[in-house]
Length: 553
Image 1 (cartoon, rainbow, N blue to C red):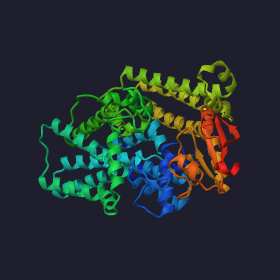
Image 2 (image 1 turned 180 degrees about the vertical axis):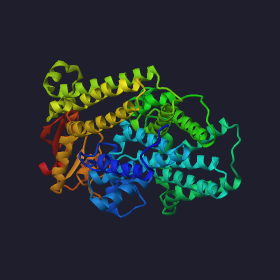
Image 3 (image 1 turned 90 degrees about the horizontal axis):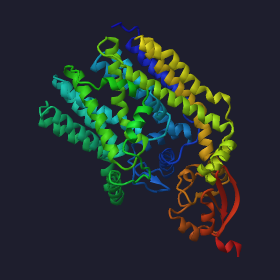
Image 4 (image 1 turned 120 degrees about the vertical axis):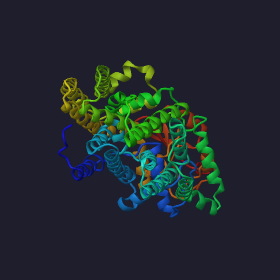
């Protein structure tokens, strides 16, 4: 194996440079997406307005779904950068840098400096992980805390020095507690089941003492239970009870309104964590190692299959539910690459074929999208069965598309043509090229596609909300669920009741309410609320004005 010319200090600097170039600059380039991004950002905005850091709210009422840690990070970011999209997404850009540093350092400790670099490279160039670090969702930090918990626990199990063992058994529950404060008790469930599976694999023979078990539980309760304890002391029993009920409900019914087929997460990982997802398939092997490397690889197997099975059972199917698997997938990909450089494993012909197939699918999709959007009217006329008033309006809003939007497909295909033959010849430059091309493809796709798609699906509605917010007026959505009016209409405490029927009947009769509807159900909404006055429509959205009935008598 060739000695790397890149020193550890140099590589740490490269990771920071990567984050400053690729993750940070364009984080605020588009509006936040409904629902998840806006929900968290709105909770942070309301926390700043209310001054109550211990209560997560939506519309200034307790929000039962999430604990406050990520909201605190966003609120701090908004304190520094203002209440805007960049501030909402900045914590995850930081998380991207911290995550790559973390996997590098763990990879270096488990195997070698070169292995750590390969793991960070696999993680940092995969499609969905890169994309998620430029969002304002909660999962990147949650996954990082879970991984740190597991990582330090593995080090604890494999360490022989008493002082180091005690340090690791304290750090592991500390990060598990932070994961609980980020997303809830599902963190304990994921770690607990992983531990039980590994315990079974080791036939109950683990180097664990009762004193360390007590330390683990105590630190977990102090860190992860702190917010819950404060909520109880403040008398917020209902919030805690509803929070627990909601978390349990995620595993029994389609709470979030997103169902999917049983293999959903397998497909998302295969395409979303590309190219690591294909390369790592060669790492699913019975090849044995010794000590820490074997323990770490076994835990990565456990986490990968546990998350896939667990969230395949859950009826709600969201892409980020399986995002914890980005760690084992990229770890196993790095394992293949590391051993490939030492000529201990091979990238097989069927993996090459799968790489080519996925590249071809991506290229075709990203060729079709701009091809259709260069002349959306032709698509609307050709496929009327796919259209309803909202979808038709979305397509007609698609402006600004040009021949340059074919660039991502061209980059990917050209890169494949250059990289794949080298990989077949066992030239390491081919694998380097594949990862760099994937990173460039993802980055350019985000820059070109995301702003246009966001503008198509929600741009007119958000522009309407921001216009009336600047005039000090109030905006709601009717006929479809949206959190955008809270954030982009800058809703203040007491402005709009949670129950729409209540504000219709009891609202300030001297001030109007501006209403956003989707065109596919606006007629039904207008019939239900006869006080609505149509004032315009654009891009699949219909806008109306509401005044209390006696204003017109």
